[in-house]
Image (cartoon, rainbow, N blue to C red; front, side, top):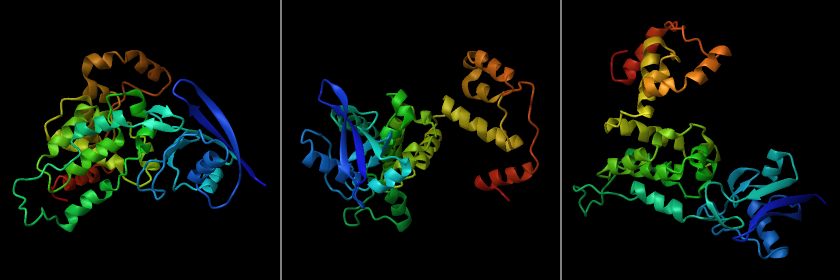
Length: 315
């Protein structure tokens, strides 16, 4: 009989330790089945949360071997195949305070969620008898972001959130996006500005939130939209917006980046000078040539035509 070992992080409010449990393998089971079986048959003191068992409530998210999963929908066999091991490590979600064992405290995240006003701010012209009718096109803009079940997996996977307490969890940015694009909302800026003010531009583009999202929500695209809209609102005097414009201008001009001038355009002379020791190391290792000024790539006219088309110009 195949035996699977589950090493689970335990915490009783004061003391933390790791405890191992062995289960006989059964095909076709989920990770939630395994935790439930351990609690019911081996250790009733084991704490974790679950409810719907259908990937709707989002309450059963747990880290397995360092990555968060919604364990009610995650196959035990699939995880064993991914890690090629009969030993699995269970831990509570990262970037949350732990209450007991695998149970985390959601209150701080919930309080931060309120900063983006995650509710509809209705337009004044929405008559009560029509109920703010939307076109199918407008509805589809909010269909995918509305699928978010606030399981916290994206927050657990977020490296920026691990280092920067001011940054909003990806699911909070999802809420800002969901209402900002709703055709019935009268004040998109009321959702976007709090996101901007909480280091929106610090997202690392690692896509960990996207790859682990159990609903397949494209959080990267939502964050990109919020950034674009913040610039339309006039928030252009910041490093993030300047960096975006530097990329835009370099590619339009030459078809490639000028890595020597990029920091200057993004951070200005004074902050760039602080990076001189780092730049010198790059020069010594051949990673940077400060005397190289790139020429336009072959086909630059095609690149410029793409720019013109996107901006509504002629082909």
